[in-house]
Every structure is written in C-alpha cells, then in structure tokens.
Length: 402
Image (cartoon, rainbow, N blue to C red):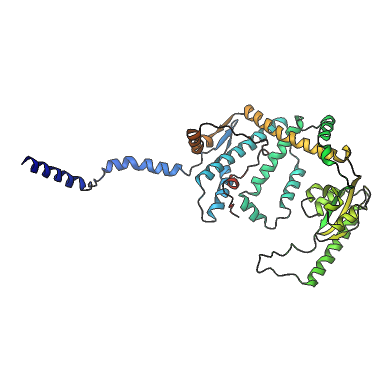
C-alpha cells in the first residue's frame, strides 16, 4: 500500500508540474508606476542635451548641433537604413567636439584681436566648388550646409593666423639646409630635368562614360568644334599670360583645369620621359621664365611656363628650397595644431554635456574587460585642422551613402 500511495503521489506531482503557470492580471496601480519610466526611456534615446556644451559661459545650442547631425543621419534614412548605434554615438561625439574647438578658436581670436583673411576664405570656397557639377548634392553627400562648411574654413584660418602670431610656423634657413642634406641623394638623376607649370584647357566635355548605356559618342563635327573652341580660348589666355607684368600663378588658378590649378599650375620637377611626348618636347625647349604657345596633347591644350632647368646630377638647393620650406612648414603646422588645441582646452572652461549624456563607450568597456587596457602601438602623428570633422561613417562603413 505504501508503494502504491507513493506512486500515486509522484504521478500527481508530475501532472501538476506539467501544467503551465496561469498568467495573473497586473494590478493597475503597478502599471501606473511602470509606464512613466518606459516613456522617459523612450524619449531620452533620441534626446540631445541643450546646450550640448558650454565654453567659458558661451553655450553651444542643440539647434546648432542638429544643423549638422540631422544631415549626417539623413544620409542613412534617405536609403531606408537606420543609423547604427555605434555610428550615431561617434557622430554625436565628433560633432560636439568640432563645435567646441570652433568656439575655442572664436574666443581666442577675439581675445587676440585676430581677424581671418576674408580673401583667403573666398578662395577656399571657390576651390571647393571647382569641378563639382552639383554642389547641392555634394553638400548632401557630405552631410554639411553652406554655413557649416564656412564655419570650418573660418576656424582653420583663425587657427592658422594664431599659429603664425605665435611663431610656430616659422622655418629657418638652417632648418632648410639640414633638410636639404637629408633629401639630396633622393634627387640625384642621370638625366636633364625641368621645373614647369602649365595652364590646361580641356577640349570639349568630360570623356564619355563607357558604363553609361545612354551616353552618346560625340560626332566628328562636335569634336572639331570643341577643339577649335579650346584652341581659341588658349590663345586668349596665352596673351594674358605673356602680357607685361602678368601673374602666371594667378592666371593658372583662375583658368586652368585639373589638380595642379590650385598650385598655380605647378607640376614640379620632372625628366623628359615623365610627360607625354608633345608636352615634354615643348617644355624642354623653353628657357627659365619663358612661356610656350598653346600645345595640344590628348589631355587638352596646354600653356607651359619653364620655371627652371637642371643638368644631370644633384639638384641644387635653390631648386628645392620652396618645396623643402613647405614640407617643414606642414610639419610645424601639425605640431602647432596639437599644441594649440591642448593650450586652449587648458585655458578655457569646457562643460561637455553631450559627453556626459553619452557616458562611457560600451565598446571600450567590453575591450577593457576582455583584453585589458591597451595602448596603440602606432598612435596618430597628425591631427586634422581644428574645425575639420573626420566623418566617422567613412571608417565605419565603406558603403558610404552617395
């Protein structure tokens, strides 16, 4: 009987345990206590603190932040994608840092009575537009506005002016001499070389895209017309370039097409085999200071200026002095930016509300727990200009929305 009773008891327990638990209704009072917390959490997920930061009493508003941030997010939403949390975090952090750095420079420039070069700003903006057919689309792709780009350029110019005042960009003759001795072996050649600049006038429109099924190959009549127009334009520019007192550098910046235009058409020093035959033939006939008549190549029509000619062997320091000076200045510029940024952040009071709102980076926390704190083997040597925001999406996602 005991065995039977025990068996019946076990069966009863198994039967009871097999039944799923019955749900119980929540107390309405308990729901009232929970709902506000849920709503608050949902709201805070998309919130931006206002101000996002304060620099020595000057607030940086959430509206200013969103003028840039919303455009960055729009690059995703326009393609039906949600911005990844990691990218969103980087944007929030980098945009806030960018606005802080711009405000630091603005206040330091005001304290020093520094005015940025308005002509340099206009030239920078014109350079940025050169070669871009659809500027609005370009802005959209970058996630910027006209004003946000202008603010970046102004910050760069203010930064440059302050560094010049502090003497951080000065390059001495002794430094150039030292650099020349280091690099001189790299410029030894057994061939004649020429230093030239040019103004390039393209023939016709851009080349036909072979991947575009709707692209029509121009007719021979169209090609002849384009060539005639290019040659006529080149003759006009040639007269400008050879007029008494003409500034070839400025004319090249205004009329030339191609990457060398921003440098006044400067192509550097090269041997005859480095250029197409027609170009080299004309360039190597010139004497220093001479300007060629229009020369046609497969790239278009060129007006060439000979800056200097050098025999085989070592290049003299005079041929490299500008290049070496610019190279040394760039090094000083990178170093000066780092130092100035540190100095301004120590000088002014910064309250970064965005940083506090974001809290610790969860990825950094996971890495620290999993692997321990690690120091980069190769820390970055250079920093971008203050005000220039490296786009975190480029590093995070190679498939940048176009």
